[in-house]
Length: 331
Image 1: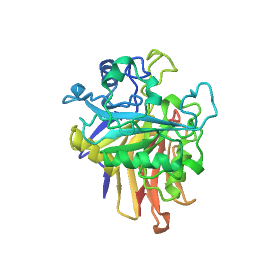
Image 2 (image 1 turned 45 degrees about the vertical axis):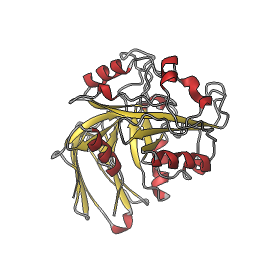
Image 3 (image 1 turned 120 degrees about the vertical axis):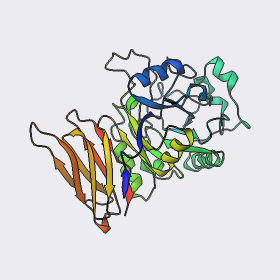
Image 4 (image 1 turned 30 degrees about the vertical axis):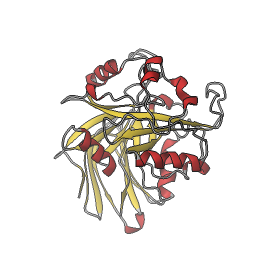
């Protein structure tokens, strides 16, 4: 079975992005231009607390995903820059229909994120007061799903949440395994992903930028171009890309490229760019790994599979310590 294949096209996507419509420093047009320069075909514009239909940016070489990032805080009117230990939950909501620009569960207490132009464009059915609790967050996810959105759980480590919170969340498409804007504090997010899988959650993983672009692209502290997903689909059309996301036909990366992934049920084989290490991870402790010798690289791997593995996923790491992460595949 071909899980990722060169018979389809690969599209590089940033699924978490902020523009001048909320707390970013670049226009959506500037973001499109800069990301396209670096090989991206897709950007999800996830400005805070409201949805703007940016489909006018889409063309044969670029796709704008209609989306927003919603916030849940223990103290809704207190900034996380003031209370640095406050638990919060941030989630991205991706519209299945590109013209669905009605913000689900809009809460005016959070609209300070929006600039005046964006505030004038906000559409919502009715005011909604979002509460910080597992039950209320799951209620919002359920409502959003019914209104045609896919949901990703963002930067859990930065959010100060632990397993008592995140293992309670339901109906998620994905969780961020890496967030470039939170890279210094969010380096445990792969463990969150692993916890969810081992608890029986059927979720995928995203690597994202969460870019705000306050600093120039030349700065080592720039928050762009550090985390992405690569989507394996027939063509660059909104419905095709959404369908590929639903199916998990993509991998997350902070550097390496994966060219193919296939399994016959007994083994899994992958081909990728020059790397130093490949690891098979399962539901339990069983792993397999392949290391390159000093001065050499590996470009493919083959690992055995066992019925007791539950699921498998791969992590592939290059000489800079950057990794690519496949989705979990169940046995």
